[in-house]
Length: 137
Image (cartoon, rainbow, N blue to C red):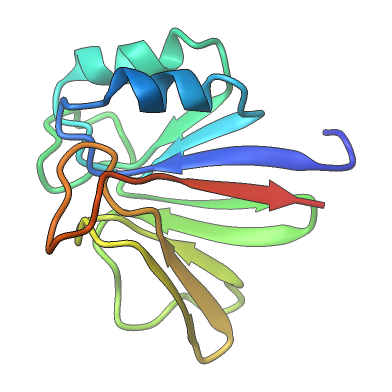
């Protein structure tokens, strides 16, 4: 990995990944999808970008081979990825990334930063379609 790393974080696409989002994330060093992709073909479009890509299974996903959660470390930062947000983070996790609510979130809960990129497919509660960039150094 280089001295900085750009991760595109998307969630809740529900088979409605817009061409704009697909084009925007193609320059990412890595792509993380936080669940509710829905059909495998939608995930295949993301993988076709040729970037390292990870996905966790959401409550609307039928692809049983996808994990329910992932614990990752990138450039010394520890991440926990899952779809439905828990009340508290696992011990030692600095960043907890989740989807499910379709509403962007950036909130400190005790020693953990909870991040939700919102929905790249189906917005909720007046929030527009959205995704997030993480830039690690």
